[in-house]
Image (cartoon, rainbow, N blue to C red; front, side, top):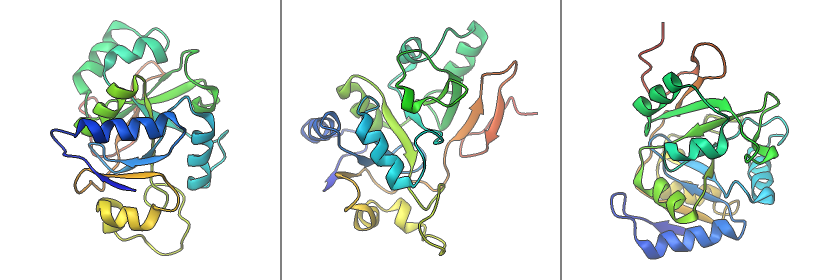
Length: 214
C-alpha cells in the first residue's frame, strides 16, 4: 500500500492507519530527515526479524537503531549519561545524526549490539515523529536494502529507486505492508557518532556536520 502523508501536516487518519499496522507487526517504509528507511515497532520481535530478512542480515549481527520522539526517551532506553553528553545531544537533535549509546534493560535484546549499545535517532521530520508520538514508543530505523546496506544485485541502484516514494513502492511493495509517500527523500544517511567512550567518535560521515570532529 502506498499512503500519502502531507510532510508538514500529516493526516491523522493516515497516521492512525500506519500505527495500527505497526502494532499488528507490520513493516513500513517511511521518510526521515535523511533517507527513506525500513521501520517497525521495536517491540514486535517478528517484525524486527522480518526486516533483517529483507536486509539479508543476521539479527544477532545486525547493527540496528531506532528513532525516538524527543530526548525524554533517553531515560527509558539508555543508561545514565553525563550532563555534558546530554547537552551535546540536545545541541544536535533533532537532526541527521545517529548516536551510539549504552542500552538500558528496556531495549529489546534483538536490537542491542554485543557491546550492549544501541543507536538512537531523533529525526527532524514531522511524519516520522508523528508516527512515534501516536505509537507511544520508538520505531526501528534501517536503510533500504541495496542503498547503504547489503545489495541483492550486482548492479548499482538508481538514485530514484531510493528517493522517489512511488518507485520505492514499485520496488518493495511485495516486501513491506505500507510505503509512506512523504515527498522526495534524500540520498545521504545520518552521521553516526559513537558516544560510548571518553570522547564522541564519528564512525560514519553522513548528512550531519560534526563540529567536534578533529
